[in-house]
Length: 356
Image (cartoon, rainbow, N blue to C red; front, side):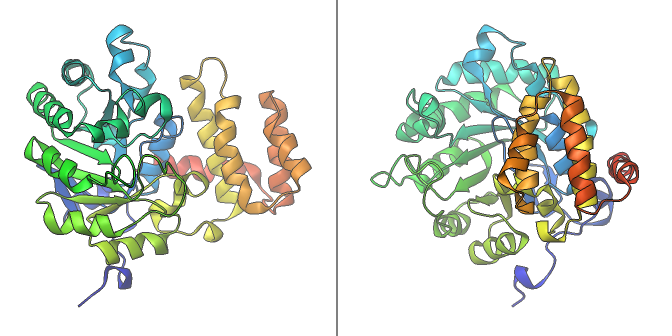
């Protein structure tokens, strides 16, 4: 028997070239997916520029940050930047979050009419207290009957596939992932992503992969595994141990978006990191009219952490408020890291992003 870990599960070519040369890894309904690594939807992280970068690096699809349909129903353009995507993002999905089935269905119909995403994902996993405590996100796993209503109504409202991202359950006393997954599938879900922690765990402790294998063995739709995958080796291990169709990578992608090219961060040169930093910052500017420096810091911190910089130097960079001063310090840092031609590093990554 050939183990997935013994072979390269995904050709490293981009999705657009894969589609004509390779069979899809799996399908969501009739939607073919070419690849087994996927960027997780993360609030404040998976914005349009970062999604596009990870798609270019090999993520098999793009998913928006969650759209809170309670907010959308009141102020429809409030979250407009979250809907933004490029043709290269496709397959592109929009994740919906709420605890009101009809409001979710109405919002999905309106969003589809205006933006034409390829699929919708239902958030059954957000463990943030303000979300879960009102019965949304992982809070929905406490009311399986509402999960059924959501999938029934949303599936009638849009002509594209539905998926779900969920956890093991609310807490250790209610591990109902299999029940909720079966209900979702029975009412229209065409793929399930399972994160191997409960809502109460949030991101503490170790993610359990055995339930992912259980769902894969019992569900008639693709199962995507999620939790504690930070390297290509761990992604291959999850694929092998669980048999899941794909692996969704969240926090591990912040420091190493090259994971979607099956590369360890230790194999990425400082010149590549510098080129990405410059490209991403420029790409973020149109989406942050009040300035991109502050929202960019969380990415910059993650990109610089592997270099084990002196704390004082790292803090000086991360607390810089002016763009010109920030990039002066970034330039000096990467010169010290051995990037002799900063212009060439910038131009190389720009060319990479343009050459799809």
